Length: 278
Image 1 (tube, rainbow, N blue to C red):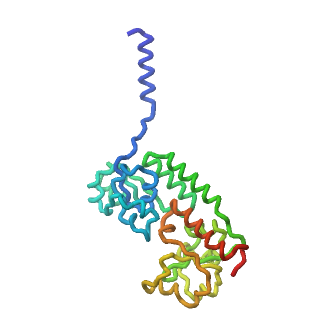
Image 2 (cartoon, rainbow, N blue to C red; image 1 turned 135 degrees about the vertical axis):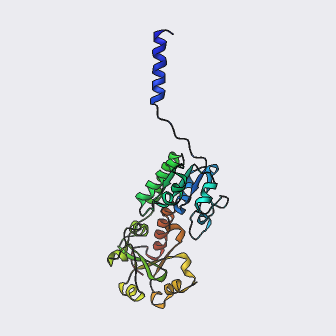
């Protein structure tokens, strides 16, 4: 072989060896994380999805329940997951390593997705899942759409105070997704005003004495089904205006964050066109 041809062959071989290998998109994705379910549905091809959690089809918990009607689901036992022969498992932090990876000797690719408690963390999770399923461009497109829609939502003026009051008197505090949603809508979180932690309890008497401008409640709480929801219908709370959000929009940080923010703003506009309390 002539010397010049030999040098050319060596150069091509070296270039080929140095080029990074492109990871193939997974063909059998299994999710053990309700919040990951919704991102996988939005970002992966249906043919890539081997199974999501059973909760993804529950409209009280999943903002993507309608889109998930025809998607296979599986329970979270190690045996059920391994029977699906996954090439990507998405789970809560610590869950996969403790219950799946230990049984498989690390043979399966695992992505652990933390809970998102802010818009910035939602964006980070979108990018993580989009990259994991092999469609990063779809993730960036989703982020651009969300940012544009959020920028178009009007913000209430006047620093009104709202309490996200849940069954049995639980109050969502600062550092939570609901807290950020309130601030995005121009509201102050009563829990922050009172110096409460991320999750605390507040009696009806304490709540009334605090005089919030709004109560934010789960839409399903309009119907009394047990003692936990019954207290939300106490006569002492009847005079406080309510803003209603489906639990499915707030249980996970994801695309439904935009729907929740838009709904809060829309519910406040008719009552306070000029920002004054009624």
